[in-house]
Image 1: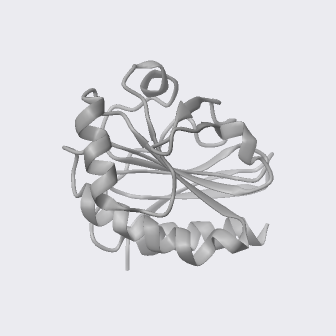
Image 2: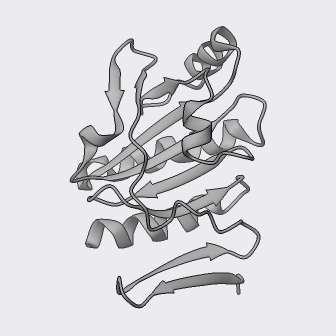
Image 3: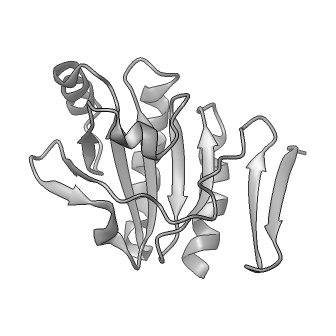
Length: 167
């Protein structure tokens, strides 16, 4: 059985579950900081445009962890759950924009990849390690956060996604 740390808010009537190995982030339970970034398709997207939907935001860099496996897993999740109201957004925080775009293009995922070569998003989202995956509920509140990616983490994401989609 997987060890978890559960943080429950009596006032909010909600409970968030974190793997014991992940650090409990301070953004959980707070409104997700809004941002606007250009996608690999050249379109600007704003996080707040997706209010009313469940949003998975994956902050990544081509050099961080098992980015290949994670992006493929997220692509499968996107394909399966987008009709149910899930939006998957990939955000590269790689400083080398050209190499990040080449990497993203080579992955050929179905969800939008956005690029942030600055430090504002990293600061706003308190990104200390990579990759970081967040789930934002329909009202724009961060409900789940996970640092890193290893085999089986996608199943944990699915549990959280299904719960948020049922709300």
